[in-house]
Length: 174
Image (cartoon, rainbow, N blue to C red; front, side, top):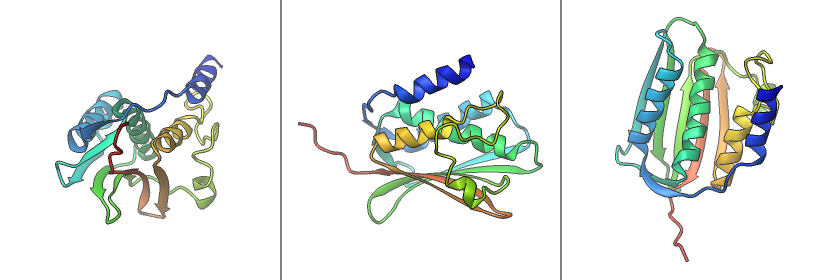
């Protein structure tokens, strides 16, 4: 119950983003290293690709770190003890100058019904002692606070991709 209350407080008291310009590739590399340290899984291989490699984003780095930590943790848990688990991080810029950071895993697919609910606070498929249902709700809130978008795509026998899209445009300060 204490864990639940603390998680709820985090959701309702998120600070306003304080964006800075930072390099995406080294940031994602640190997030991978942190995930491997916090959740060691010798059965999971994590790969990283950023195109271009010197890609930069204007965002609150610590808040985006919370997003990536939650997404990587969920990907690791989705794969579980499956043999030959794979997580792929991919960052790139599209034609509309949006930066996309995708976290893909080859774990079980998320049904369309679940995909509609995974960003809703307190929705979880985990045992009560293993999750509060707030991790992805916090992720969605942080992305929204950055005027970004988050989406999920899941296919049978292919796994799941959660994509965070952020504006590459740096707004002038007044």
